[in-house]
Length: 217
Image (tube, rainbow, N blue to C red):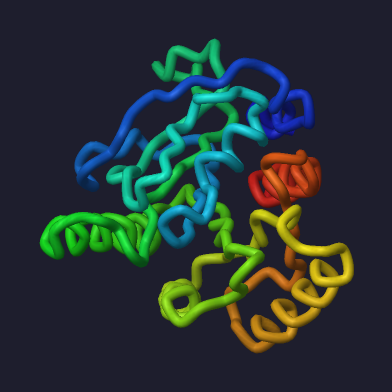
């Protein structure tokens, strides 16, 4: 068992994590080394809130009521690794720019979109993308377009429903079933759909377990 795999344990999420860099262009990506998992979703779907909940650190990932605030690939790693030589973190979490209705000039949005898609298609160490879907709305047209791109690029992704606390309990089960049915024929989609609430802490341990399993693969 390698040192990296050995450190991929549940306690990893209990230690402090740090933001190491924002990547506005592919040439600024960190060297490929540790496994990476990325979070994608429409603007304002709750990516930053979910990351903060996963790592139990309020304010680590920036949250905003203004859609499209995350304009770069934002990298987070466990604290205590120099990043030099063999002293690499065991895993990196990547918060990707939201897609959909970003309040920015079209040219800027197109640049963010190209960055995201180039990263998805070209990052060897990317183990899985967690595609966040707002539980109040379900899968929308833009989400389906992103799924189609992930399928085409053969990038493994898992759907995570956010804001599940906004739904009544029977509604969550129904939405999980409907979503599972919609992704059944998508070749790159992981079959299990997860439901979460960053505010209530629901489903957070399930996402952590999924991340560790994906990173070990």
